[in-house]
Image (cartoon, rainbow, N blue to C red; front, side):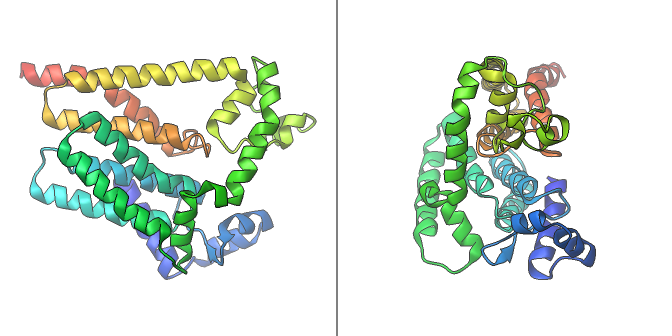
Length: 299
């Protein structure tokens, strides 16, 4: 949370004051980088992270985590601080222009409603859904809001259409190669290690697509089974926890994992640093939560 807050502060600096000279030089030295960052008449912000994707997804995940923790048995001051931090990050997330990040708070909070299944939560989600529907359809000239709106209208998003065409193109290869083309055979890694391969010029644009192409449909199946096992054990442990604070932390970790899993379809989210650290920490917390709960009860 502290890392995300610091990143948000610097994102606000870039949005309202501008890039520092060395940041501006870094953007301008590469035409490809400039084209990636300058869209719809404005620069996508990346704070001190490697790119807007990492910045946007990290803030989206952490903001959702703050909202979940705010529902826990903590003091009023901590709850207010968590809520303010969450809204602060949500607004900073818009500066990234990362469409995949925009849907993650919605996905995470819906999953939260499913796991808790409380009337108050359901009604709050319905109210939030109505508000979101208004935001999505309201006319605006704000480039950040416009990009947010297109995230929920994929048929109007040119980049989404390109991804769908790429996936349709590579599908026959995946089906006919159960073990795939090998690790590092697509995208930038493919251009570096096997530039002679036809796969080197294929942009996966998705963590799951990359796994399917490099590891084949068999590799994707194994990966999916591993994720299923993580969620099965995580949800099972969450349901049997007794300590209320530990329970809400485990709930937050489940939502982090679910949101990252969803984000890994439109983007290569899980493999990005420091998002991958958050992913593995969440798995570890869910795995040992029962032991912590037993130790607390014994004391």
